[in-house]
Amino acid sequence: REAGAGGDAPPRAAMSESSMTALVEALPATLSVGGTSIPNGVRITWSERADRLSFHAEMVEPEDPSVSLNDAGAISIDVLSGERNLQIRLQLFSEIDSAKTRWYATGRGISFELTKLRVGRWGALVAGVTPATIKVDWSQYMDEDEEREAKLYPNGYDIYKMRGAMGKDWGSNISQELAAQRQLQAINTSQPDDEDEEIACF
Image (cartoon, rainbow, N blue to C red; front, side, top):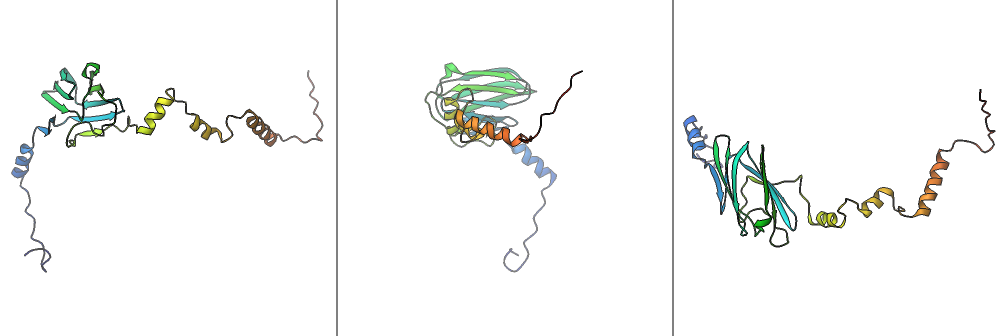
């Protein structure tokens, strides 16, 4: 009987162990979307600024990495990780200045720093649908307002934030002096008629 027709829904057939094994074996070794293909087990995190971007391909102990890329944003990474030969292919969202690319490998993966050919936010690392294995690196994320502020105050000094922390009268010598006097009066517990206490020195 069908569910919703006054009867109970038919019981679901349990998946056998052999069926589950076949399903796992049927999963592709590489996730491919458009011109981008990422092997299973590789995770990519990325962040951007208006003029540049960076990404990190996480993998175990990469060995003998070989990297090729062009201004059109096509990146090929061939590397040995563990006992696997990995082939990572990325078709970036837009063009880059490949001559200014820097990359380095560590025991935890391969990191890239890329310069955009044209200034502007991309909003995505790769062209087309973003694979689930590509994530934003929120620890490095900066929105456009924060980026503009960082350029205005490269040393981290933000006068508006400092004024907010110091009070609205911050920046006025007279106001600072008056505030200091009020603070001194508040902590002064002596009375005007109190006699000075004599201190004997031996």
